[in-house]
Length: 554
Image (tube, rainbow, N blue to C red; front, top):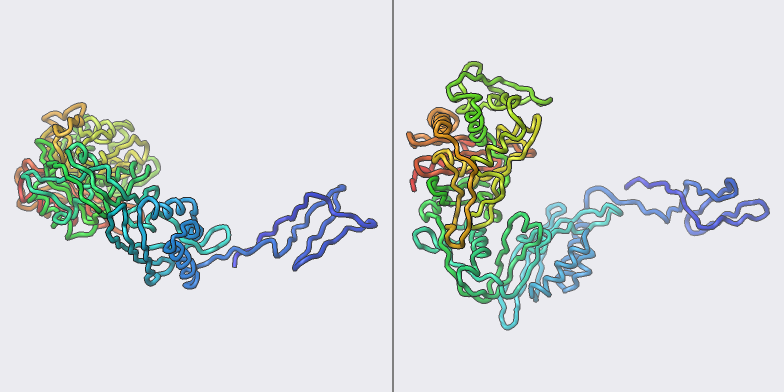
């Protein structure tokens, strides 16, 4: 039971005074006691027990979970959205979406079947009919809800999120049935073969993005479908609308992509070997995207992820250091076990150190403090400018043909600036960005990656404002080749030399027992980058995925 609060009772009028005595009013189970103070009435702290109910706290009982979930599901099933919404902790948002379930999504004959609860979470299955004009098709899917206590009174209610109604919905999204507005597309690989989500599961989000951008431009005709229409928050996250049920087929337009069927199939196979893995393969000389794959097909981490890249960012940091002539690959440069910067103490992996060695050795061993100890010689904006001006990162202007995140290297100061030199702090990237970094080193110039040729719709690819010198490129290839041959990437890259280079990364993430493992590399006119979230060190996790694809060639 929660603690009762002692609250002063107030009256708008003074109590009556009879014969110099104060009238005491007794009623119900409690009473109020009043005293005169300076001619006015002041309330005693004591109050009626009936005025305040205890707020129930503590874990929900099985009966509470069952009662709250049954109330919600029953009202929803019976087409009473306001009543169902009242069983949630956000009635306003719930009413809008649940009312739209019938009105906008045109769903009828709804059957909801609750499964066995696990604690406060209740899974349930949904069966309904999508009915629009003379068209109808069945819909079936699974979802879940979680029961929580309302803070004000402890009442068990459904924790409201749009995903309760359908797992593909984000808060602010809605379900709509009607003419899609966007014709379907037939996406082709670089050889003219059709790309389907059935054959290449990772391409589901990519195909959605292609349809949204090119459906009308490709000359198709829209059909009728039930789809997820994204709200502002999802649009900001660059999520595309998603088709759930197609009631009538439209006439597709045709869009040709740069994807290689051989590499795409191999990429799908490789990421399937590890949970939460993503990879991208590029052609450095042109920027063509040859493959993109994710294990976990609900979100395109490879193109739209925003993750700390860890030590793979040391490629960009080294570019800056070489250009500023602060170090050369063969210069003596120790890597201390610890380094203090702005009140933080930075450590190397496994508290290692390199007392006597070259910068190349520290790059190959991915020794953090050999990079962080340059911080006092740098301006806060130096790394940001390097990433933008040479690698085209963080300007939010890439136009690859589908939604993508272009990386972020914010200006930071103090310890955060030091952390950004090793791909932590506020630095955020994805495999597309880091494959582009390796491709830029290989070719010497940034070529914006693309999935659909810019000539298809007259897009203008992003450009870097300057190009690294041939000397800087040679220095970068030197340290990356050393890493691939003798450093942390040697095991994964074995047998791929001599025209190759690589960099591993391990990015610490709060709440994860293991870091995200990264590897970015090039071999000839191929570049690739991969990440395995919560997998461990990059050489052991992302390394085999990237290396296997580079072995295949273009």
